[in-house]
Picture 1 (cartoon, rainbow, N blue to C red):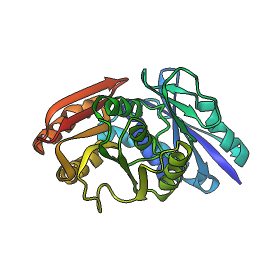
Picture 2 (cartoon, one colour):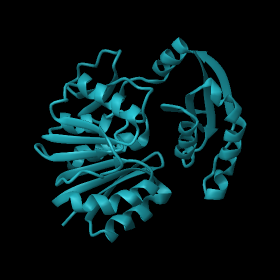
Picture 3 (cartoon, rainbow, N blue to C red):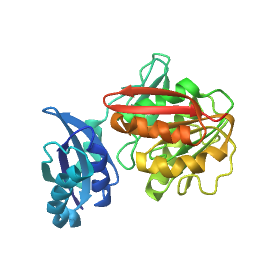
Picture 4 (tube, one colour):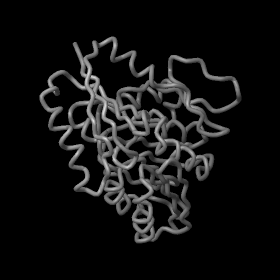
Length: 285
């Protein structure tokens, strides 16, 4: 089977919206890179998506009407065979040092022997390889707030990277939820690969529906509009003293998300920022 390698040159503020549109065309994952000052979003699409690429270019340009600068908005396409598709992810993916304690390593590479906690991932089928600033910020926020022995939940788990990190950093139990069954399968495999299946449970679901908690830590690296749905449902599932971490937030949306947390009674707001992205976390009294 042949695939279409589709790359869109855009900006930091618009690249999540571009990624969403590629996923809607049938991509199972995206890679973010940089070229000539632009953020390049690359995805592999089935051949039948070819007839919709002109509409994709128009959708990217139309992001201006939503207050997002799409930048160049150029769409580049090339054909790739199945084996090319599988190998292409490896060209983009290298070990990612997250902090002094954590490093993300592709499944096919040997980890460095430097004492850091290793998270091994096979990328390409779900969002969350650890290369994106929003994922790194979420991991750093987890490091800052998770306490050993706590109960945690990762909403929108993607590859399972955040759930795996919480288990390796000492969480007693972790729930990992994703609405996409493909992501659930990928996360389950990565959980097994990292030897934490005894503490991480992965399932398909919509946000926290069906979860009763109580949780000590809830983490979500998802879009701000989804955070607006999540927070009212999440807060009642936190223990007193429990924390909620929100990532996937561009800096322009950070104040709105902070107000959302305050509006639902959370206190002690903290934030981390990098490369135009922000992660927030706060405490249920």
